Image 1 (spheres, rainbow, N blue to C red):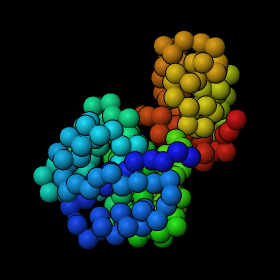
Image 2 (image 1 turned 180 degrees about the vertical axis):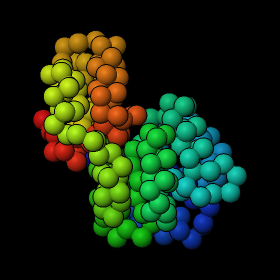
Image 3 (image 1 turned 90 degrees about the vertical axis):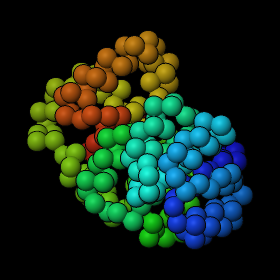
Image 4 (image 1 turned 45 degrees about the vertical axis):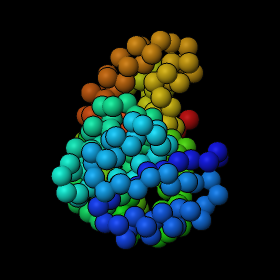
Length: 212
């Protein structure tokens, strides 16, 4: 993996310094910025285009969710991974609603944190192990068999490719269809599965062991 640039967003200086020191031990990871507020994070991300942003949820001023939403609207290229002390189901689902690329707990082991950062950089959705059961429960459909029966072959192909981390453009190229057609298939399968986003679809696929 090429060297990746990371932005730390947290209003606790000691925590930022500790995480920055941990990341600095990795040859392929560089901390290019540390900021304490959502507004600073948005400005920095637009100007310096980090590859990944570790974002605290509970900050003074602009909240983590508001910052996440603004970063996504700004179409920054960065993966945005929430980094929080909260293991609340509502916080996790709120982050996913706004298309976070992962949700990691601050009490994660150092090795796990580094592994998850690298996985996120490779396009995978990452979540701390203690949260996986909460998320799986919230995304569980009422009837697995009926849902599978309702999906067309193309919708199932789209779901598999979403689960593998492919973008709409990559899916279109892989299947030999237009990006607009991919979006239509995604909209249909999201509706059938009762999901709201690509992230939820990817987690649903992982839970049900759907892969290429």
